[in-house]
Length: 435
Image 1 (cartoon, helix red, strand yellow):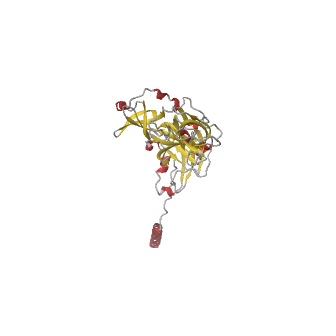
Image 2 (cartoon, helix red, strand yellow; image 1 turned 45 degrees about the vertical axis):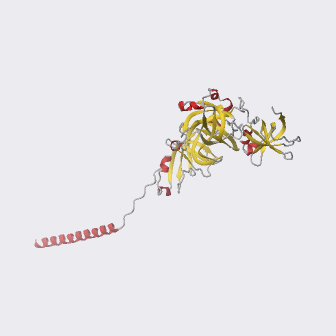
Image 3 (tube, one colour; image 1 turned 135 degrees about the vertical axis):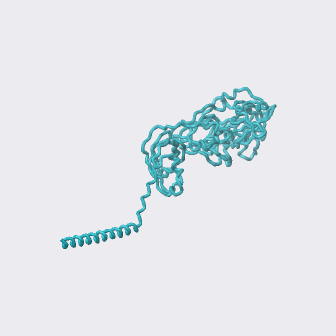
């Protein structure tokens, strides 16, 4: 018995020593493991961008990374020739760079587009994008009439605007440039055209135009332009009236002195004589009762004391009365009641001077009457002025004697490019005796 108990105690001691040894080893291993640096957790992948605002909200650090995107938006303007693209989602619009990509979508379509935005991500870019689906556009345009200066509200969005077309220039085979007068400001619109279709003429028309509102600081004709528009087609321009037969000029004339008594929402017609002008900004006229500035982007020059009529809305600037959103026309040299075709004769000198070099070189027909203001027997040139301005006239192949200064003449000829401005190359001009 004593031998068995001694053996049993000896076994328990060996077991105890083994347990302590194993525990100590485990503790050493645990301490060693805890001394090893822990692996850093993997950084989550950047969130997929699904809106224009989400892109613009990226931080400086986030812009240094690539970002996957999947954006649903309307194509409001796409010009593959100039590589210009504007898009609009439910909240805002934006310009998107396209790099060297040529997409098959067009303005008026709703697309789902996906890809990656790559560093430095300074601008929204679809250079690394693919179109997932295409459908008709979903977002209607917003009216800019009455809130033309709200770039914060309308910037890069599709809008409609009622305005007056001051000038039209065919700047290349795919584009028209329109100079517009809207609410007393100058707006420049670029219109995409189909070279294979007849070119419309919007000059001197009141229109409703649909396009993208693009804030800018460009200068056109010496004037700062705060707004441009991008228009996808001439079909987006609706003619409301033409200056020569605009029914609003049938309103009874309102004496200028009575303008302060009228609501500013009342359309009025005034008649007076020209006293001053800053083309593209205002024309100052005076009647027997007072004087008013007609605020307009129209650029046609008028002679001092030339009789004009205007329509617009009464307003005040400081102590001076004005006519807002005005359009005006001459009563001294009335316009025809029917608008001519692009190839019809130009009937006043100002129409010649307003031509672009390309338009002047096209040899537009000219027929107007005026007074010779400069000529010389040995010079092939003379200057003729009517109520709208003065223009250089070349005798061309004519052999008859040059008209003397002060002579009333009828100028018949074709436009041409002059040294400093458009000119007229004459074909027979007839002299009118002084009355």
